[in-house]
Every structure is written in structure tokens, then in C-alpha cells.
Length: 76
Image (cartoon, rainbow, N blue to C red; front, side):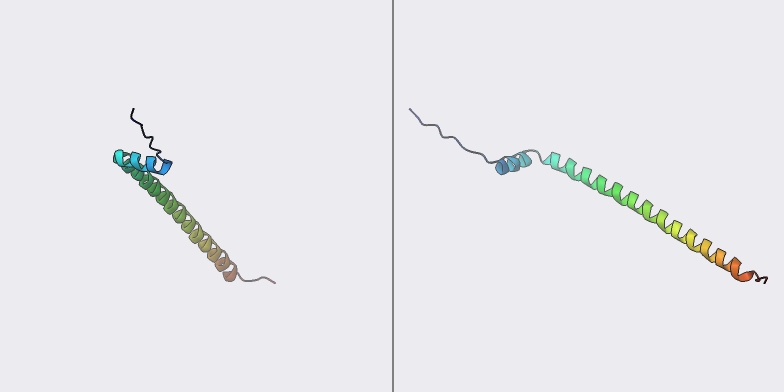
């Protein structure tokens, strides 16, 4: 009778073996992550542009308000 040996495969070994067998899956995941990064960067740039435009409009409104006040003579 031959004795059969049982090999214990740990979780980390199993994951690394699966990764070696399916390299295309890793590529898909990386491209998904890259796409998500691109979307976040795009939205962040939109928000920054909006905030910058809002700040410049506010600054212009304040300048206009105080310019009108300084140009008016006080009638006391």
C-alpha cells in the first residue's frame, strides 16, 4: 500500500497561483482602476474650475460694489 500525501495550500499561495493562471484578469482590473482615476481627475478639475470661476465673479462683484460706493458723493 502506498501512502498518499496531502499538500496544504495556504490562501496566499492559492491567490498567487490563480493570478499566475489568469494574467488577463489583472489587466482588466488595472484598466478599470485607471478609468476610475481618470473619471475622478475629470470631475475634480470641473469642481476646481467652477470654484475658481465663482471666486473671480465674487471678487468682481465686490470691486464693482465698492467702486460704485466710492464714486457716489455723500449727500449730507
